[in-house]
Length: 266
Image (tube, rainbow, N blue to C red):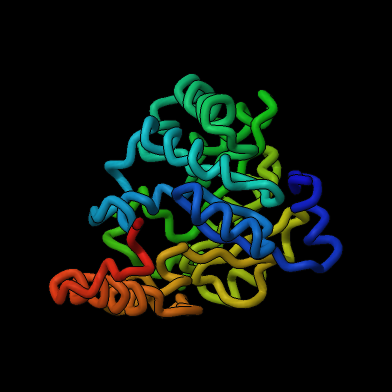
């Protein structure tokens, strides 16, 4: 039986941590769901980790619907949530309603996530919630605002920034967000936000005091290239394993040892 928004809300009051991860296709969703992950996010991070782009900004609504459909087929227990990509809600409440509706009706998501705590973002969240679409807010480091922020840097270090984040958190709860993603903020500030709100917080690069944690699929499994961000813990190094397997396959093909008799029809 699938987890619901009520279940996720109850996890905070019950003191049960929320385990969340991104997924972008059926096989990854099926594995995450079977492992007991509580919340699966079809992230617009697919722009960087799947499409190989430098930012999430080029990801389109059609792409998000497509990937959500694939992930939905692999989810049985987890709550399925999808990111609203860049410019799918910034253009107005009407656009936000139409695009969020597509992610729910066409994609099969149970909730959506959108970035920011500005007055405009609050208006969009309130409208979506009123229409019956659950919304997770996202504050702190918001990748869709990467150019405005001057790059990917920790947010909320100064007093003014910290107060702004606390204000945004309170406002998002007040307009009906069922939870908040806290990204790239100091641990102390994330603790303040988490204790301030009655809705759960899910952290990425926000320390241990959030009500849950989320990591990107490729980072968690060690599928990335180069150095990982400080907040990432690779729980496996599958990139190395996959490269070794592919090299062994290529070597055996070239050596004419694959396919062997056991792989051949007679």
